[in-house]
Length: 634
Ligand code: SF4
Image (cartoon, rainbow, N blue to C red; front, side):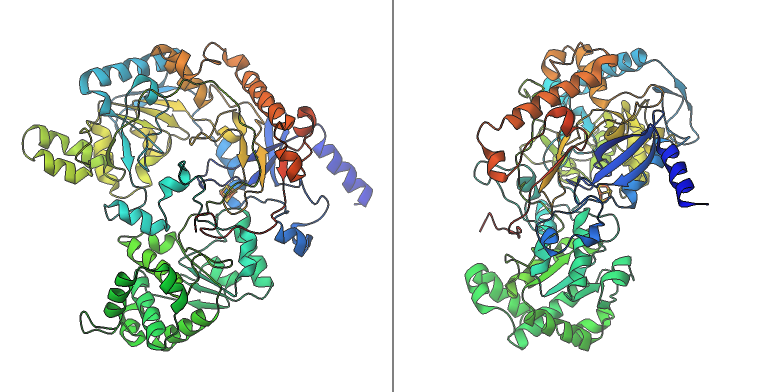
């Protein structure tokens, strides 16, 4: 076939297509906001593509050092980002509200289609009923009732709901949380007046300042923070050596590693202690940095322990070898290279940190970075798993004029203990266990009211993505009433609800905000927050799928708090819903573009008119000097 013919056919194929820009935030990459472009034809998304709002006509690989250093590169979604089309158009998709008839769980009972009115009336009645019967601490909302907060959108106005503490810690204490992540993520996510910018992450170009990158239980090339993983590959191309320590020969080991050190799963702490022992024995640690930044008494105790003063066991590489299956000589050589390569980017990640007691090795990783003076310097790394970095540009904010919250949910349990909260409640009420025992079992602080969880509000497939699944299913079957959003009937969580509402894929099908209250103007992923994108709606949702914010607004109206929850939209019909919200975003953009304080001009941003902006709704600024961990704090 001639070139002309091929071109003609391609043009025909793409005729009448519309292009929209989005972020891919529903996958839960935390504050990730990879840019995804969609092509829409006849009301359906026919393709997802990477962003080309910058460096048009050039591959990302050809941008050159200046563009890489300044973070001025195209954003590419990972494989999960590309997979949304299958999710949206799956034949399994739930597209109508449904109610359970019969028992909960697979094989028990079945679902029947109901109208939105029936679904919303029933849910509103059940919310009132649960509060009347069991009190305000009876409702738990997934997926973000953690970090001492509740994500139940109606809670602040109907004055009900419980908050949970903790996130990944499996050791049952908050300290684990902080050790695991390297910092109190609650503060990092929700800055205070005292610490307005407590960011512990690093910007991707800072990797170029490293002399050595160590990826410990970290496989960044698979579904992780957009551009940062690409910068790891660039760092390799620049000749920065990379060591991967992982029991598995991962894709990152294959593509990035100059050396792969396989290790027996769960023995990372032993290898780290042996590395510290070499640093002490050969006097390779950074005395000046330690004297300035490390608490001396604790450090002396730690040294005593490592050198065998406490238990007679020197934590040498020979001691670690039979535990870790890493040859002593490999550990010793690694320790020497690590000590002499400053700055070292040692990143210790979820693979090891999220296992039982993983916080011990996570905190040990930070201690190693402190001993070698790498924790807080350009090219170093705080080792934890978060990439929270400051935003480089002001971002428009729409004002939905919601009333100030009238209720803050008390922190009643650890977020891994909700099944115990349900299952042990009866034992507590029957006097089989004391209040103190009940509190201890669920992590309820002494000053908090006891929860009596009788309603689950599910906004994710919570029941099978956590440990102790059978216990959780038993608890989910036991509560008074459960409802929430479901995407596919074969998701276990849907099978345990009394009413399942059809879940939107909200990046592409609605104008919803993200669960953590990010609006549709979304800042870039942690690690590269030098741009924002206006995440557009591309297609109408299928069947009777509705925006989640529409659902909560209808419930708020039925519960008598619509004027507080969503005053501007409470009476807006579904047919006008998206255009009304778009208009609020337009107003926010125009106010931002007005640049009252000259901040945009200072950054060299020349805002386009709204309609023009919508054609390619991404605004970027160059990174002059990349952010490194604790830069704003120390
Ligand atoms: S890295 Fe996360 S946000 Fe980016 S495309 Fe993949 S799943 Fe989406």
